[in-house]
Image 1 (cartoon, rainbow, N blue to C red):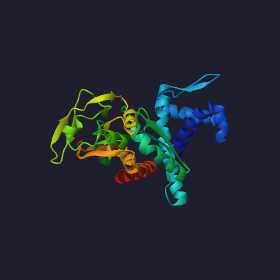
Image 2: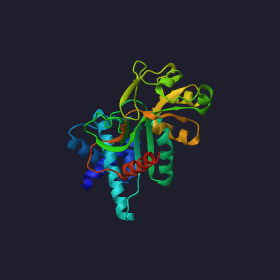
Image 3: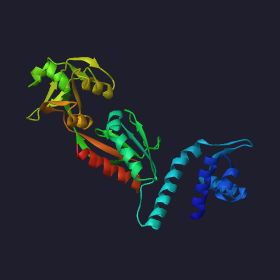
Image 4: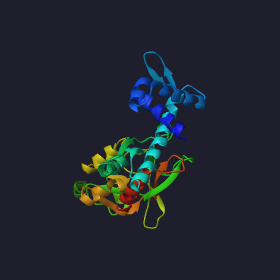
Length: 295
């Protein structure tokens, strides 16, 4: 087992240092030992992992595919060693998180900064985009998804339920009036970033769904753009409650037609299927769950 770990450490050091001789110097062993460890790893893998020439080396496709697995093994080993030394486990290593742009901007940017400030051995990389990422291929530790995920192989952790609500800037409502019903809302300017051919499906006080056709003169393919228009007083927006919570508290936006909202949609954290959930992931899940529960 120790030989296996030394081979993995040597493989990673060769790639980071750029040569076998540099890896040998950094590891404090001879060039022959480094060469032997790499050869042993390649024999057990049954394929070449690093292309070697007299001038340079580079990982093969198989070597590149092995890198994230090596990272995870060495990271978990480092965490286990830290537990033995200190008696407790501290989040450490690189945590890669994928999330929708608006959700990440509002909730993950401040949370990530807080976590790395609190835990000096933790690094966080955020990938904010509105497409569905492949957790394995893109080496994602946690992907936040709004709605029922399609990836049946991933581990699911429900963070919260979310609804979309109607909001507008106080300045707009002072100018155009505050609607008391959906029929009055029909005369208002609405803002949208979803499919303009579909109605807004809302649930009223009796929880029965109603399709509402908004009058929209401003549309965008970005939730952030529509959010900006709403704050600037250009109309009524249907947006996730979690995205507008801080604006409602600060008075920048006002809840319109409080008894009308969309059906509840779950927010999940997806993680690659594996037996051990690293402390860095557990800490993030705990913090984001608390943050969403307090909105």
